[in-house]
Length: 455
Ligand code: 5CA
Image (cartoon, rainbow, N blue to C red):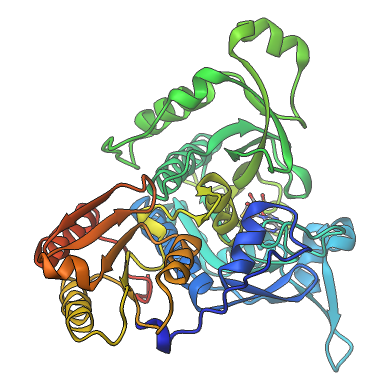
């Protein structure tokens, strides 16, 4: 993409309404624009990041054997009356009437609708296990939407639902989700720690939230510092292997790690040596629930088991805050000059800065680099504006592309361009051909999911 043809409305001033760094940087980098309280338009740069994150979530869900579907945002209130949640959900639910005076609502989550799909089409244990998920907009009329996309009213969420014959199978689905979430966050360059939490309006007996540690996080967390040392890494996981998934779950949840909803001072003091006790803040980027037959029983989602009995299925639901993750990644990865995108989610993998637009040699070298990198399958932003070098560097630093190639007449006279890492600031001179090889090599290690591909 040539910057002169792109739409990147960067702001010079820091917007006064933004209280935390990710919100400030998203506005300054022209990623989002507020439409109304807690509701945002995603501009080209922000939308690209959202799609990158979404693509990783799709890949990891399908790797775990979960099937993508898409359910509507507007749902009939009648289904929610069956589960009893139409009245129980409270003011966070946006209720709407159609022209026939029928009650609709904008989905805050989708346990009822997915259970309705299940009961219409599945009636035998032979069709289990089954996990359906979607990535879809949600609406919760939060009292205090704030921090930009972190606590929106409209937000983008992956929500998945497992259907299993037994409690034991449903707990495997819980563990499988836990493992696949760890993998998903690690791929995005994030550490998200599973912490015992409270189940809130979703209900259920077992739940973990995934928290990214950050001073600006809305949740208060208490944990044993040793949990921050554990990584999933490149382990080969067989998602059908109950024992293996349970072992990973136990490894990641054995040490004390809880949100304030379930924190217990006495247990904390008894279980964690004083030098490892941490009280901090975190951003909740996902949550998994096991709730058994809470929805299947009242809604009649039954299957015939091997003995011919009709039994309610055991369920759980599992969410990832996709739009919130954009903010969370920025909170975890930025400096005073702007965003530092992890390579897997960067909107463009590399930027090209032409220090002397209009200089024949500089323009030609930039065109060679641009064409060469694109031919290697990379997504490139070429700053071809007629602007001072300082302004171009400031824009590149602000929007946080992981790599930058700087091209100027002085370097070209010596046959070199400069390749700079946004994260370390380290710069290295090399020929244009070598720069293309180097950048292509960095991204060849993990082929990035194609954001435009359907799942
Ligand atoms: N039905 C379950 C799982 S699918 C559910 O709704 N879970 S949830 O309420 O925990 O939401 C899942 C994730 O969505 C949260 O972990 C959080 O990352 C994100 N989320 C929730 N509310 C908001 C909000 N107001 N703005 C942005 N993201 C949110």
